[in-house]
Length: 188
Image (cartoon, rainbow, N blue to C red; front, side, top):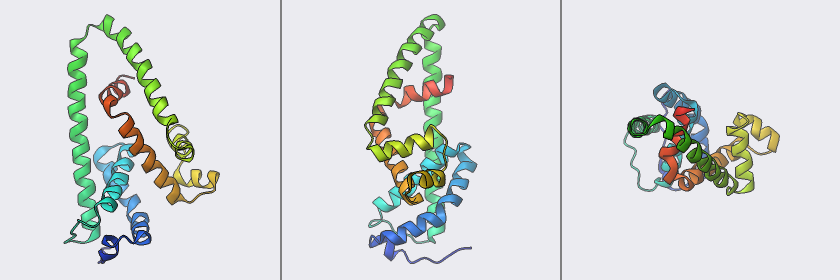
């Protein structure tokens, strides 16, 4: 069902219009991103970043098609970029792994892994308290947004906002370690 949505409210910064749009398109866009990425966490991350980018650039965007088509195209492009990034990182990881002798490699990896875990823990602890709590419930306890919302007595939208904030903050805090983080997630 294609809706003809007037985007002037979005461009004017009408947050309630944006929230309504987010709630309407979030799940279908996550399913679409998942069909490309085959990883629901990655899919949700891509969709959240797409909405963040849409809101952040709302004044500059020109939507000549429907908002539906525009959002799907943004998610599609973001997924393709993510797939490209993953392939590049996998290439670096494979190259790194072949350059290392296995005996030295295992000892070095354990040391680096320990240091990385400290950096990740520190980055999570630096999150604001509510943001940290929501993130841990989502990522470590595998709770759904609605379960977190019920447990903490906040709206699902607040949970979504806190997750987006946490992911953005962690990405910034850990950007220098992304290649190593990917390395350990692949070899575990």
